[in-house]
Length: 252
Image (cartoon, rainbow, N blue to C red):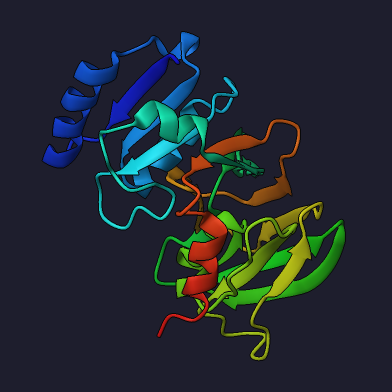
């Protein structure tokens, strides 16, 4: 098995990288059968973004902090662990953001897309679901569109629901909504097309953030689930993501 290792810059990750490449070698990324990430969730997200076109499975080992998307770091029996790992296919969000100048940007989001006000003034956002306006004017600090994978992150912190892994849903969760008073979000089928229009965008500037990729001063954002090229994460049988999500729902 040809493995390509990547790590972050912290001491634990660098030490693990040196040790693992001594044990298992270092294949070229384009020739690798598996990408092993020696870090935490942030590096896992970057690896998913940077290798999305390669279709290579990713096996993470936690050398960071939380490591929700990773397995326990152990240098022994890595080849056997990868061979016996349970694959999880995930479909990221496809994001298209437009600035008032007409400049357009496209990227993906594994965890979430969120819109956030850039000034002291609240954002005003029109929300369309499958071309139908559902909220004409949401006055808020921002809004989150989260995948099941990302539902335990910013989405949950903002009061959104945890979505069980494998459920074909995405969460739409407002950030500090002021009007309408009673709206606290929605669960939408993963084939939904979401359109956000920033009202009065010249005075009420909003940025769009897809995982860690930021686009400043946008006026329109489209979100849909990208299904044509799913990404593959590998998990040890005693470390399945669905079990972690279940535990999160009962955490106190």
